[in-house]
Image (cartoon, rainbow, N blue to C red; front, side, top):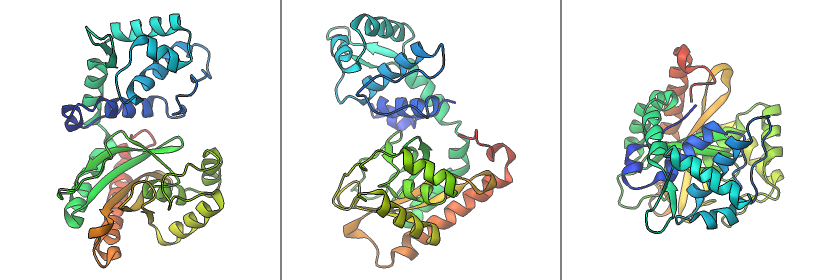
Length: 303
């Protein structure tokens, strides 16, 4: 199912967010690495895998690329890349600058993402609580869902403060180093958690001095999170940013998403559990209850 990008993201010229959300839910199990092309697992999907890999590369690069540059980065033969790009251009999923020949995500892709974002049933079920949580805490709030070895933000409500976070809708973030990721992992059942942990890259990617360094330490954190019901990101991804995260549950008590409240270390309130954690847990309970009471929202396909 396609998802979703906030129209404000599009207005700020952020087509990457649109693509990342579409890609995340079309290819949930695909690798996010661009070191090598994805391998088709089912007969007949090779062409689609090539399209998705090329779109991923265009979305992930900081600056637009030419076809020649894309060919070098993709690992595919140049004729394959030219044919793939030609097909994507014909469908307006890519766009080519008329003078430089550099490639960007196309208007059709962004159009599809914009339409789909507003129809996300999970987001619709959560949006009012997210607004209340942002207003109560005065801080930035994220809604994230699992995406393979990552969580992906499908909603972000900015703090009214002049100092804002760099995250955006569509961002993939690590399971092991974020409050949303740890909140999600901690509340999985034993088998699902073990499977998720075994799939994480080894050694664990290390972003900041506080980032958890190995699975043993991560398991200890998850045990604590499971006991108290909420997780923290103690400057593990970005200097000065401290986050509190808690899960949202779907059918049969299975975690399906997580919410975080992100604060700046220097302005954190004296009693963070009262100021941030209590309203966060209340929001998660309210959304979980809404999912349970609405049959259409309690299925695994609500994303």
